[in-house]
Length: 484
Image (cartoon, rainbow, N blue to C red; front, side, top):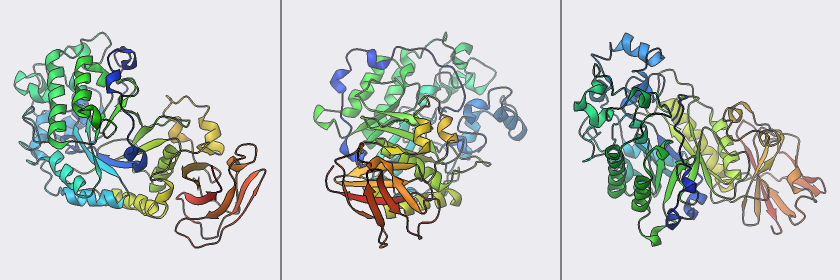
């Protein structure tokens, strides 16, 4: 969700801190098998439906588009603060069962909501935070309803937390604004300095009172809804170490429960071994021994619904998912519901297209593991020269039919072309000097009765692509081998 280029405070890397080893936890097999999940940014910030989910902050930042939009549509902040959007967020058409039915049809194996964004509004029935969706706005326990709908369909349940950003999210130092009124501190957060509002390294860190409330919110959700995955946005490292340890201890429970639940975190906010590291709008450019996760929005920019949002084609999303899975990653897709509780038809169509591909080719994704290489082709050659921290490169490079990604299940290797192959497709990763132990015995295409003509030589496996392979979605070839 970090769309604004704000500098962060330097911190001691979590993996250098002592006393964490007792909570090391293996990545559960179910997550390695699931591969694909769906969550959604949906809250009060979808009412203005402008720019991004950062509207709650940006509407107070002079010179920004949201600031000007707020003036022109709703009036000055001294008369209309962010809290005034809450009664407008009624979500009359929200139906958790319909949403989860759609997620199942899209092929997701885990799903859930943003439990609290940086805006300070909790989406569950909270005793910790009076500013919540059961008391105000929809007047329904959104997290609770989603949890029941997800469990009913045997999916794993994820809740995500972004509320560590609340420290300095609003200009609470400005007493002329509602954000600076102590009466509304439970929503806007405590009074902080201008430096904290500007996210300066020299600014004060969250105090114990803030950290205690932050912790209580997470513990309340864990205790009431028992999520299988607990996701934290960046800036988790801004929270005191003792509070982060308490979250891990609360969520993991007893030692016998470890290896069943997953904490998702960014950067160095937690030590390696405690959970699974996530990458936002980016991905690893190499195959990784440890499972990791990428999260991307269904749109090209915002993580929440906006009136002018541009959606990504389903084929781009599927190609990205395949690329990530081939490198031992898991793919988490964010969708953008409207304030009224509907998922726009355009987004539904994308989800159903993803689900249609997975229904036909899902065996090449679900339950797979990595092969000796994740792939071959021009993009692989290009991106392995790119610094993984350079996110933009991953969205400017394009896949071709020669970009092949591999997954494996037992003695079967799946070769997935990320373009529209035609003629003869040469799989160079099967050449003799690269994989002398991998001898192919049969080649088929899942969901197709077409007989595939192929040969294996010292140069690799050559496949005559059937004429029926059309469209922009990845094409999958199932390579049965005599042993790997």
